[in-house]
Image (tube, rainbow, N blue to C red):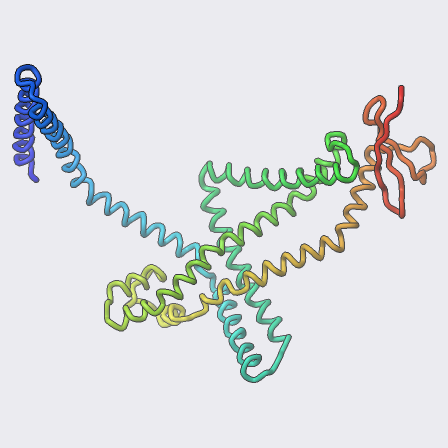
Length: 354
């Protein structure tokens, strides 16, 4: 719609609005017919809506090309960022293909030849896990770089570290309360020391959970890839070049005709199916390791923590350094007593009369 047509239409709508308003006024003042009043009122309302809607639609038509262009640009930027996020380094790609090949070879040995080789299984698992760890490291580095650029990112990372400290502090307080049957506020120095000491461990655990969350979209993507894989081949067979070339360009960032032989080989490779295969094995191994560490060192850490409490807060009433009874004055009439039983310190609370 050109300017002259728009101005002409605007004048027509304005005159119709004035005419309908006049009819509404005449109907309400002199005719006073309910049916006629209803018709003229609705007509006047419709004309007002059209009068407001026409410039909105005109502006919308003018904004549409720029909006579509902006959406395309932002969509391609998202695709580029996603491709960089999932891009494998040369070493990682090599390890992934080696691990995938060894996995299939071991399947042949186990399933067809009935030849069991634990060494081959261990090597395959180690190589795939190394590839997965490098992949996760690359992604975490990418996320960290993106987040750190903005102020909100720095705030997020600060909150991330604060969350790790808060979790450790909460666990330390619970351990003190469970061990001494007293409020943790009476042992603030030990609580803060334990919190600072074990915050890195809490940070690692939270990061491991985040890594597990990171691979969830890839699991969904692989399921989708498996579902559309036949469709992709059919697209190529029926010579719908544009959709197929678009899929290739989204994956590689290049047009199909300028791809090198190595890039075509990687495009047709099925190694992506093995990309998340070591994830459950690795996280199961981490969980198993943490459980074993807790089984072997949990009692030791608990014993060291009890001794730390005694050293920092409890005092003997005698000068004998081997005294098995130590005391900590909570208030004027409330005491906590630490005593040795079977080589370990235990705690109890008692009150005295003034």
